[in-house]
Amino acid sequence: MYVGIIIITVIILLILYFPTEKQLTKDESQQNLAIIAPIAGPDVNSEIKVIAIEEDYQWWHNLDNNRQLQLALMLAEKVLPVWETYASTNELTYQESIAKPVIKIEPYLLQAAIESINMGSRQDLPGAENRAIKKCYAAFIGPVVALQDGTWFPPYPAKKAFLAVYNIVKCVVEPNESTDASHCLVTSITLSLDCMDMNKLYSKEEIRQLLNEYRSLR
Image (cartoon, rainbow, N blue to C red; front, top):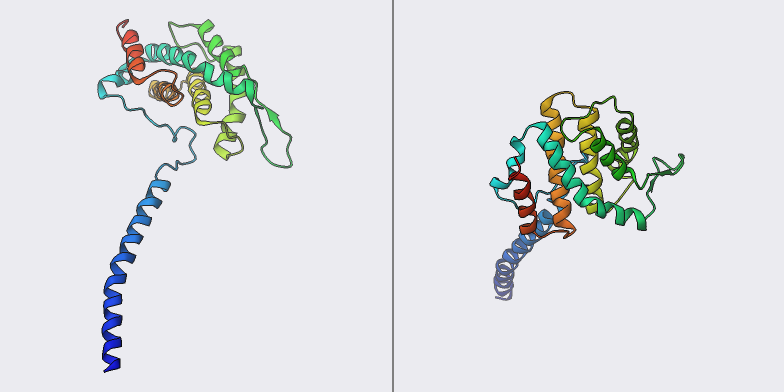
C-alpha cells in the first residue's frame, strides 16, 4: 500500500515538474537568442545598424557616384563633432600586440580627409593620385585593422563616424569599379545616418528633412 502511494506521488511530481522545466528552458533560450543576435562578424562594416527609415528614404542607392559622394561628404561633416568630442577626451591609441609599440591615431584625421576630398573636387570623384588623400588613407589602415582585430575599442557613435569617413576615402583612393565605389559610399551614408540617430544629434524627423532638402536639389 505504501509503495503504491509513493509511486502515485512520484508520478504527480513528475507531471508538475517537467512542464515547468520545459518552460524555463524555453525562456532561457529566448534570453540567449536576444544576447547572441546583435553579435556581428569580423568585417568592420558588418555592425552597421540601419535606422528605421522607410524605403522611400533610401533613394540614394540609385544616385550616380558623384551625387553619392556629395551626400556622403555632407553627412560625414554633420557627424564630425561626434568624433571630435571623443578625440578631445580620450587617448586615441592602440597596440597591435604586447611586443609592439603603442600607436597614436591622429585626432584630426577625419577632418583632414574631408577637407582633402573637398579641395579635390565636389563635382567629380577626385583622382587617386591626390597625395593628401592618399596620405589620409594610409593613416586609416592601421586603426581599421585594429578595429577588425579588436585592439581598439571606440564607442559605437565615434566608430561609425570614423568608418563613415574611411569608406569615402577608400572609394576615392580605390575606386576600381563603379559598383565598388557605390557600395563604399552607400555604406558611408548609412553609417553617418546611424551615428546621427544613435548619438541623438538629430531626431528621425530632422534626418528625413535633411535628406529631403538634399534630394530636392537633384
